[in-house]
Image: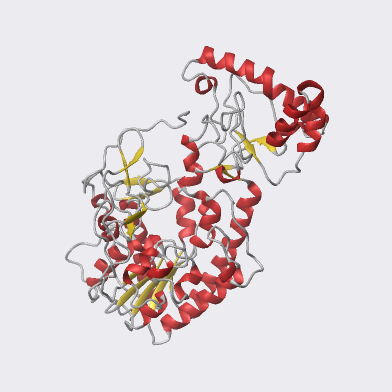
Length: 520
């Protein structure tokens, strides 16, 4: 395995003192008013962000620190009522179904990298807990799942027809998330949904289907992109229900999921002479010479003959080299490569090379390498993940170096564009409905753009989207850290204050760690 990342020493894994900023935190003596909002009965609808999912799992401490739980605490200062969350059974995370583990424990940083906490989960999905619950955030939920009867039916969990998290706290096996919200007669709601409508497609490296044009979500796969018209219809119906009795609320748009650390941490070009030499530059230089002579040079020549020479360039000893990837959007030159290489390699070997490199190219900055690939680069493909149905022999047995990373490893520009188009459409729907219904609106797309560029300053801290050390995201590279959830809550509070004239205070970001420690 080639390690691409150098971890920095973390100095803040627990509560950290900070210098209060008068612009960020309202003094304890100030009177907090609700304005025209009524926080007496608050319900929160959404996905894993509302649930408090973090570090690849759902666990008690994470749930208690979710942005909606932080909001509920602020609402209490302005007349808000109790806020009940369907807590899991432990701080290890993970799930059991009939005593069998179906989701693993959470991650923590051990000083070298992320590892799973020891022990087995104790949260049994089939043991329904009694509500009603104000926090209706369901990890994994897409927009249309919130109105789907049976999404919380434990009998459907094993087949994937139902959600294990909602199965624990749905009021009945046929309940819907929106229905379980409405029976509580909410006076105020938050709705942040839609990320999962593209996230599965993104995290799978585009291994899914863009369902734009398909208006039947019942036929969608788990990694598919939701049709924007389906999203618009579902979203409009949910907001109409939630506001039917005069409830006010806050909604949020969606950032581009491709800006998350999951897609921005592993560089497209990590192959330096030192990396290829296992830390030794002379060994790396010799390796580069051998690769150029035996693989990259012959491939470059053959592809140049086929007018596709830009796909592969010789490796450099002085600059970082790009990863070798498969791009399924390219014309497949397998047959042509086989024909060109047959004279030198013989028909059988030439066909093998043609099958491997027919759609291969070197990565560019426009390609997004997914986070798990940091432990894949340089490892040997297996029969299951090579795309060939067999494990390739040496020297074609190093992912990203002598064997192309596969579709699931990389989000290519065409796939990124599909995500952008869908997300933009969802965001138009969200903003249009927010304006029409007079709801508070949080522009998380702009917030994420700022985190991923210059950072956001609060309470003396600069938060960024940098993996592990940026303070905003947990170790799964998708979900917020404790401090990240607090930051989100502050933006929601600010939007509510602006819309309804309330004076909800912001929380002190310094009271929230940037990562959870191993022991909680």
